Length: 334
Image 1 (spheres, rainbow, N blue to C red):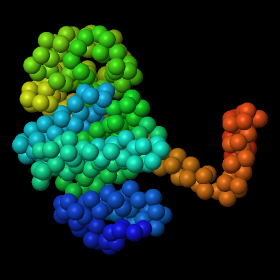
Image 2: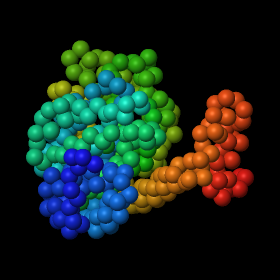
Image 3: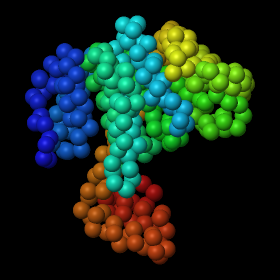
Image 4: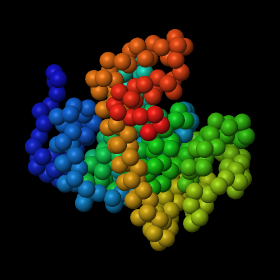
């Protein structure tokens, strides 16, 4: 591919990542994200070598409706944490065009201060065609960042209401950002998303938004009482913050740390990390099966005609799926 940087050796990748070389880290992530079969083996070998250096970071997922101020919040929270001695990585899942495949990689400009901070690393990842808009290699990228010494990893979702579950499955703490306002504005947050939350932060609760934020907090706290709890040991919190002024950020991070301490004490953090590994394994299995299915010559030969029959109403999607799966040796209902 024209313009593609040559691959480094396995030792050079490992040495660079462990040595906190940001340029090598970026190249290692590009290797992990590559769809070229020739890169896959090297990428997995690199992950295997680096795995012992991972697992120590706070893994925090962040979502919220468009316009809630996610990037402004991450910029402010990242600078707050850097000021406290942390090293912060931000994995920003970017919406990709379903027509052109293009991606709006604008997070570095929206996180103006953090993007210039040497103790921070921002990686916009195009979501592509992955279900839920979640970048194909976000889990692996998170591990590379941890191996490079970043002890806080934020995973920021698109915020379109589709990828929250996938992100919640790969982080320890899931934060939902809400807009100040009562009733109607809270309806923009799906109940299912609230059930995933370890905390809900009402952003933009400064200036004229302060009074509306207090009303929103009351509504949210009432809603949380009626939602099923994700963990018996943790009652989700609701609090007001401002990414613009920095108000409430210290309190919010205290909640994140309390959550981690609680889950560590109960043993739930270790169990959660194990479950994350299991979910990762199954996502890779599904990905490989789908790729093998689509590239199977027998399937590829029949796919256009079978798809045309489905679109034309001449066969049902179920029958079509059975026909194509049979080409790979899967019998009915297997």
